[in-house]
Image 1: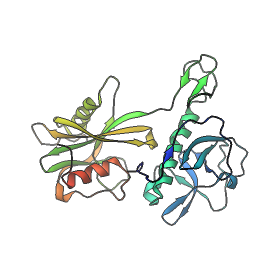
Image 2: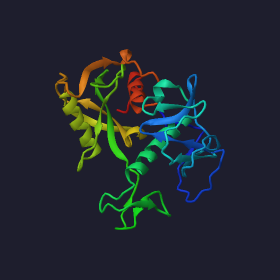
Image 3: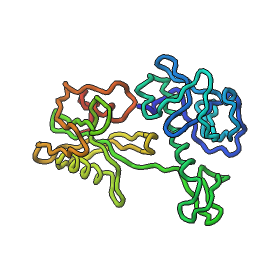
Image 4: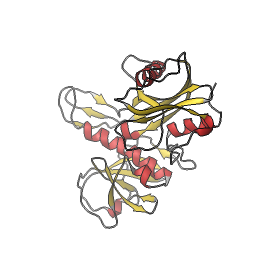
Length: 278
């Protein structure tokens, strides 16, 4: 999965007032675009010394021993050898390096958080960086705001040697995925599993068992993967406003996605190989 970058390590410890290293990587975003270089099937990030804008370089984290900074200039200017690439589609354009794509996604999540919390949602006061932890704080009402992490589920619904596979409506993605959805207020993850399967496929489920989790920074998610068994009727009643296809697929017919970045893909292949938790 995208976070599996060993032997590399994302060091996300909070380090206040870290000096700017000109050899560090610099992330500059504009909307959902990242300034980078695409060399064949690989992405390359600019160094701090490569970008001449006068904006603040805000320390984010380190990848191994390479410090990574966010360019707060907010200027969508041209730089020789670099281009603006859509963060959401970056994993479909390039093969890696995996650790660079994961760092870019994580930086994008922090960029959105900083951008969306320049002012306090409670009193409207301007916020500033907290000195002691990764947070922004409002000096007017003393509220602290932390990076947003949204829980969601990925669900492998099984019926013996078959698994429910779907394609979402309105998305330009040709390959299959699994049932997925966000956890609602007052809901457990297990209740999310049962509700999402019922809403999207009209199926009841039982024997809900946890598999694995994954950060998915593009939409601030922490994904929790579950397998479960269909309970009763196997007839699919698809929500056509949400899905364009929902089918039962036998183990031997499961085809994975083009890359191995997603929890969804891993769960499909684990089922194909008969290794899902029982």
